[in-house]
Amino acid sequence: MQKLSILFVALALSAAQPPAPTPVPLQHPVQDKNFYILSLIEQSPAAKSAIKSDPILAKLAEAKRAGLSEAVKTCPADPSCYAKALKWTNEEIDQAKHALSSLKFSIDTPLR
Image (tube, rainbow, N blue to C red; front, side, top):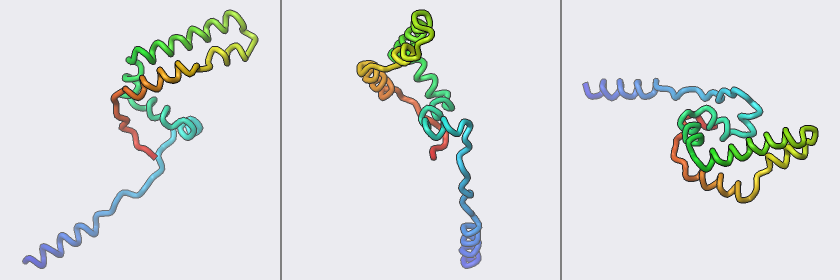
């Protein structure tokens, strides 16, 4: 009886196959490949919520929107004016870095 049990367990274990590897589906291939962390954040409700509710990041986003709005009004035909409005200063980069590193959320999307 014990040999039969061992045989049954061995057969059951040998029959269990791991799932075949499949590629991660890419919704937007260029964005997903070049800016993968942004794609993960976009697909994760917890990450989006954490980022949207952070006051420092909200202030930075509003400042960039205001800069672009001002660029449209003051120099609509000058592309360098738009680039200047979008350029991040070292201080803004540091603020965003600290705000993002302090956020607590998990991304439940499969990693590559």
